[in-house]
Length: 299
Ligand SMILES: C[S@@+](CC[C@H](N)C(=O)[O-])C[C@H]1O[C@@H](n2cnc3c(N)ncnc32)[C@H](O)[C@@H]1O
Image (cartoon, rainbow, N blue to C red; front, side, top):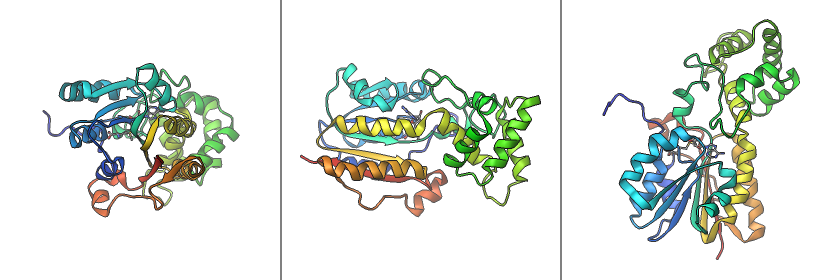
């Protein structure tokens, strides 16, 4: 094995996920965001008599990371391809009933952001950003070249919380008249030109624009809404739903949904949101904005 190879993804809040799912012998769990398989693997390892259905809509994640785990865990692991907003339908279609726990670790894997063409400005590639091209028809390239200035402004402001949203949207619309924006590098340079160097930030000036486009292209917030409604339908009494968010809008959706569910036979296990320890953040800086919340279906 090449030891210099970057890990596909480092799972965040791993111990907390295992603890809050309260694994039990014979338990049946769904990991709705399989990714690098770090959480799935921990569940299978920590409770040798449990089974896991692991779902992802990214075929690359399932192929790269799913098959090696299948070789170790055999029938205890079932891999499913699909959108988590329909997790209830995917389970039913594959002959599964109610489950003891559901996990979702929203957003993208480190592999998707840094290694997959079309996502990142770390190297130049055609602007795409679809996690599952079978589920999304519109690419980020189509959005930046076709959306109106006002739509781009809304995307950058709402999903990216970008201070210079209007200036960037206007510059994009002006640029594309003569030169369509085709690559991640071209977009990043244009944003840099508008903001001027780093614009006083610690991160690359295009980071929030890229995040906003990715969330828009993949309908990330809409899918979380669908997922939450579907997830509570598949829980057994006593079963738990564990959600990890990275973006404040994601966390707000989860928090509000969990609070509403208190009226429908659920209790919020994490009245205070759970965040990574300083030690975890030092080891894996990508975990710094993670927020974990847990809901339990009352018996
Ligand atoms: C943060 S990563 C999960 C990492 C994983 N927990 C691990 O330990 O490696 C998020 C994963 O969710 C997947 N994903 C995002 N939106 C999805 C959706 N609507 N349906 C299914 N999978 C989705 C992505 O393809 C990605 O692999």
